[in-house]
Length: 231
Image 1 (cartoon, rainbow, N blue to C red):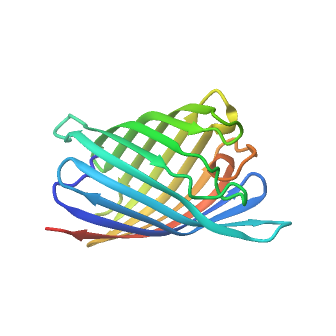
Image 2 (tube, one colour):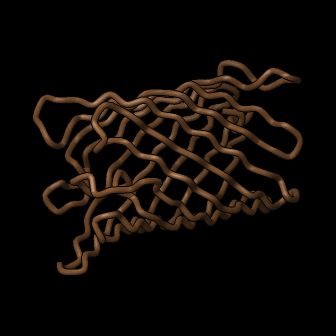
């Protein structure tokens, strides 16, 4: 939430996201595209899309559209002194990826989370607490309600280099929808460019019966971003 800037600008993200999932398959998002539009002091609108390739040891490669997700981030309180920044982020994942070829679930998911951001010295810290509502891919007219937690901390090694730690967890009554993911990486900032590289690891990963990060074993993410000022 503290990343919302007091000016209008657009950030374009382009990246690669590779996941080795617990069912001994590999899922590659290439390209992974993000668009972030900051309207000013309060609101940021985000959109993310990827194109998937799924590789298996015994089958042919399957590829096709991934899911489109749309988000809105609102800052209610700006960080000042000992007071943290406070905000809200909510969004929806649309069912563009096809379930019949193992690239998606054909279901719509909704997310909402409260945001807290605070800087301590060289550490930029962010805590998100919220909910996720999934349409179940296993049974018609059934939904799964999940609690979500995300914590990230970026250590400013220098004005241009950050070391990044990120933990994400979603938990519910059905273990097939639970996920614990740890990500470690680095971020380089130069003028209006940002380059990121990270390793991600699923914790206690198992094959949950469908593809994607719910069954994540480990993975790698590479991305480049560019800011464009509108005023």
